[in-house]
Image 1: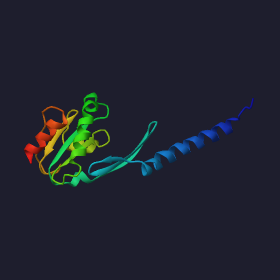
Image 2 (image 1 turned 45 degrees about the vertical axis):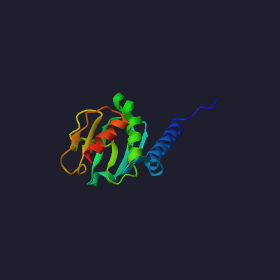
Image 3 (image 1 turned 90 degrees about the vertical axis):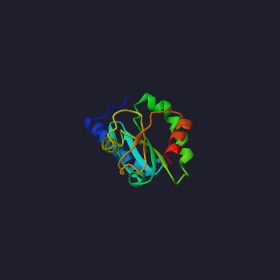
Image 4 (image 1 turned 135 degrees about the vertical axis):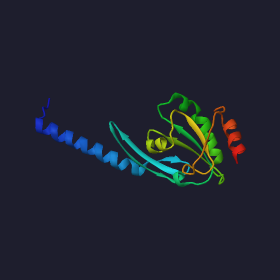
Length: 153
C-alpha cells in the first residue's frame, strides 16, 4: 500500500482546485440555454457560480408577455410546459415577444419590475422599460394565455 506525504496531498488538492476553477470559467463559453430574445450562459459547480446574460429583450420596445419565475417554485415548474409551448408559438411572431425570466439568475430585472411572487405573468404593451403593464390572472394554459395576448394586440 502506497502512502502519500502531506506535500503530495496538497499538490493534488491544488491541481483539483485549479481544474474546478478552469471548468467554472470555461464552461459558460461552450454551453448556452436558448432564451427567446437573448442568450443566457451560466456555470454552476458546487458552491461556485458564474455567468453573464445577453438579454436582447431588455431593450425591446414592442409588446411583451413575460413570465417571471423561480427555478425553486413548484407552481412555476407545473406551468413551464404551457409557457414553453407559448414561447414556441410566438417565436416567429414579430408583433409580440413572449419570454420567461429566471428571477434568481436575473434578480436585477425582477427587482426593477417589482416582482413579489412566482410565477408572475405580465403583458407589457411597450416593453419592460415602456412603463405600464397588465397582470395576467387567467388560467395558466397555453390557450388562455394566447387568448389574453391576442386581446391586447
